[in-house]
Each structure stands twice: as structure tokens, then as C-alpha cells.
Image 1 (spheres, rainbow, N blue to C red):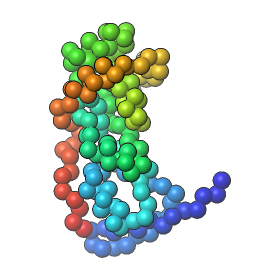
Image 2: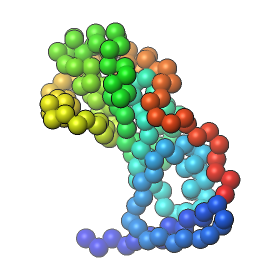
Image 3: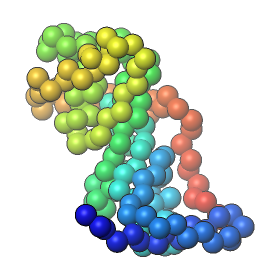
Image 4: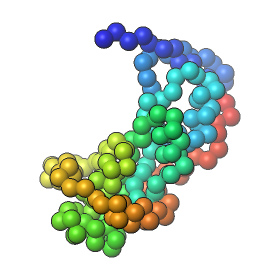
Length: 165
């Protein structure tokens, strides 16, 4: 399995050129404008874009762009850093399936086709987070969770402007 490495040209803010050879790249927190700019300066399309995604922050335009261009979406903070686990709608769906709110959030991500990266330092929660493949959320529940969008971001504010390097 000897795949050819592709050169990736990166321009920094002082027009310094850096050539990196690699098979694929991943990016984090890239918006559509960032991905478009990358396409202008490189022949390498990212394999993955790691962004904050959960029912309370769905980033639909960006997710659709990524899907259209073959970029996998990797969802970080899919559990909202615990800040929305007590939401009544989420708790109701969890109770209906005899699951925890965290398991419902992770199942939503999986059914959306995202790569999930939940974080926990407690072994019991790690085991719980992995126990999401014995149920499916029916479309009605998926639609209800989709209706929770409120732009709730647990991380840093979204970068709205393209880089002007």
C-alpha cells in the first residue's frame, strides 16, 4: 500500500511558502470561506473538518458544503460539554428509549453521518458513550432534535471573516 504523496502548498501571512507532502489533511473549525480559500491555494481537499456540532448547534450550511465536497464532518463537543443534558426535550427522548441524554446526543450524531468524539475522564461514562449501537432514533425523534437548533456554541466564537494573508 504505497500511495503517492501530494504536495500541499501553504502560504502564511507573510507570503512565505511552505511545501508539505502528505496523502490527506484534516482541518478544524474551517468555515465555508476557509475551505474555498484553501481550494484556491491547494490541490488537496481536506478529508475531515472537525467542528462543533450537536442538535443545539447544527451548522447546516457548513455540513451540507462538506458533504457535497466529500469532506467528513467530525463533531467535537457533541455532548455540549454537559450544558444541555438536562434539556426537557432531550430528557424526554432519552426516557422514551431508556437511554441517557448523552447517548441520545451521540446517536443523533451517528445517524447524521458524523464522526463523534465525545470526551470524558470517567470510565463509566466512556462505557456509557459507547453503548449507542443497540437503538435507533426514529425520524420523528430526529426531527424533534433537529428543531433544537439555537446556535449554542460551547467553544470559541465562530470566525466569520476569511483570512486576508
